[in-house]
Length: 349
Length: 140
Ligand SMILES: [Zn+2]
Image: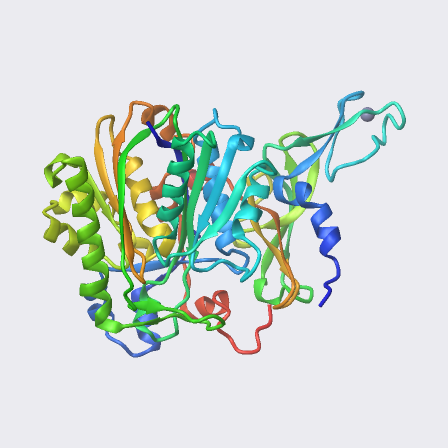
């Protein structure tokens, strides 16, 4: 069976608190904290971008699976909506940095926040068809938000990398299912610096329709019910949405909390559901069943049903945990945040 | 538009991306940056490329408060001479570490960062820098 051979994560060191952003725009911090359930978000350094985040996560995934030679990775996909180049794939740089070149196929994936799970499915197909021994799928983003837009409270940075294979898996992937529809809930036109969104419209017809229908679709096909799962991870643009999706679907809150890390690091876009899954794998036991549903604006969802194997115990501590990166933090004020995000006019590099 | 310096950056990918150096199979000496000829054995030398573990210690460091052009936004930042586990020393920026946090013998490990950008149109040069090790952070 196809499964997860290894995983690795990376979150930048810097954080900005919701209060600090609210102070600058004279907004009510408590209203945003209650509305979004986000206390603070991660911010990348000046010398970090989607490429560097992806490389760090990929190296952690390789460190967690000493049996995998990087040259055996036959496919590498990086999902992001913040690829540093418009033309020149992020995946080429990541493949070179981890020494997987030159015998592999590589490409960048784009589908708002679900580009990482799209890569995961592509890897599953290639591995299952035995075209490649291992595939690596990465979700990474350094999300941009217009200053003073509500998105500024959550747009964050982080990455998660997964190695997919047939042998020595720490978790079997029992099945995957997707939904896709044309929904204009969030977009960015070519050449524009910041995305636009449909305000309240982003909830009902977009996120909840896709996440709920996709999750139900997967469970129908597998004949599983919410009670069969020990953990559930939903895309987390804020803390409220995944909890409400869980409620609609009938998953207890306790099953969602271990993978709900948006409250501490913000929305890492393509990294979000994959970082949530990593946080669950950091603590899951053999036999635990995990449900994961990503969401990408535009719109669509990918659902996965995953069962943890006994190998999780021996590989888990070979790379830093998600919690390690969540706790490794240093706060910055809005002035430094602006500098880090290159929001200052006349600031060339 | 043709950009200058692109081929020279590309030729140093192995060294910059993967911290790859040279080991001489004749005398066992290890070199970074990579050498085509072993300075010790000359013609008798057999230089082969090797990847370093990426672990090391701060041998000495300096805090840059008056940066060179293009690095103004980074100041103040730490430049360190890192003694690699395998022996050679590497001059590099130490990141995720403020001037107050760095100390001699601090355990560090390699990380992947942007080195510089050739303006808004040019290539982005990536490569290694060093940061405090996971263990060093956990012990704090
Ligand atoms: Zn020699």
